[in-house]
Amino acid sequence: MTTATNAPHVAVVVLTWNGLDDVTTCLESFACVEYPNYKVLVVDNGSEDNTVAVVRERYPWATLIENGTNLGYVGGNNVGMRYALEHGADYVFILNNDTKMTANVLTELVRVMQSDPRIAITGSKNLLMADPTQTWAKYGVLNWGPMLSALVGRYSPDTPEDSPKDVDWVIGNGCLMRREALERVGLFDETFFQVHEDIDWSTRAREAGYRIVYVDTVGIHHKGAGSAAAERPVVFSYGYFLGRNPILFARKHATPTQWVKLLVMMGAGLLLRISVTTGTHAVAAIGGQRRFLLGMIDGFSGRLRPELAIVHTQDTTDLASRIAARLRRWLAV
Image (cartoon, rainbow, N blue to C red; front, side, top):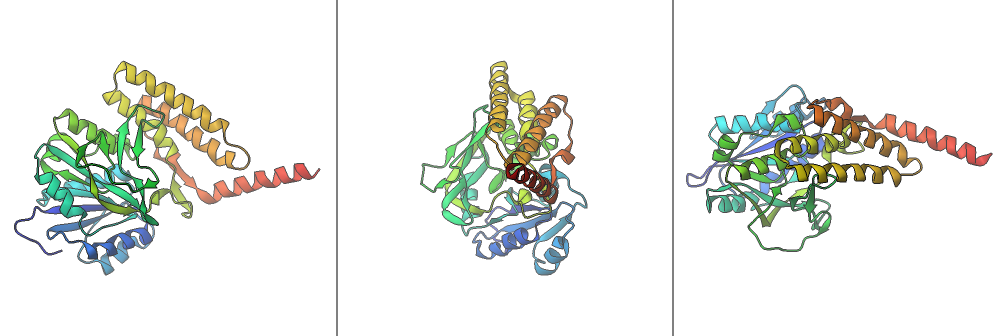
């Protein structure tokens, strides 16, 4: 973490919430980073495990920021970005805690940023941590479909493509943001709490005259769904926010035609997902679709109920087991 006077200063923001194993893996991976002028900020969103104590003891080279409560993905990252800007960062690199760094990702993204002051944000590809020959995803296309957008390269072989290139939006982890753009466009919109804040920020930056650029030559390793991992006793379900946040986004950015397309596609997607779930899987699936529908309602009203996204995995498992046992008894009669 030594500095070089001719290299722009990069602040790396790593947000964590009850993810000790993930964040330690992430921090260990910085040993390979070649970029000479960066500082890691670990922002803890009120973890109830040993994250704070372990980070403070094992990684004294990282700046630890304790929020004391769960501010959501958006609010937590905004705390880190504010700190970075207040302490003179030229660029802010947003990095999920369930990732591993690669040697040249910062070097290459900074190089691309330095080539054009109109670039607000550059994004790297996300390689699957379990198999880096596959991509978790590369970048996003805003298609006003059932989930508002689509990810390019989702769980696909890592095939090269031309870059740097302008895209609709870059994935909000493994992305580098320009100081001047953050000051002009603002930070993430905290009404989103989590999900689609990266689409919104990229859209706002483009409306302000900036470029949104994807870089295919570098990547990070991404485990994926760290806060929603089934092995955790309490997880965040994305269903609520996938229903709510497209509506919030449309209220800010959609034309009448885009509104119609989004609502038709969201409704069709909801009916399709309910119709294809059967057996014991239907318990969790229907619960998720209920949260999706409530999210849509809250999107129209502007209401935020993050408690609807909290799932106690043991409760869900127990309910599914009880239903399965009852079905077996019926079939045995």
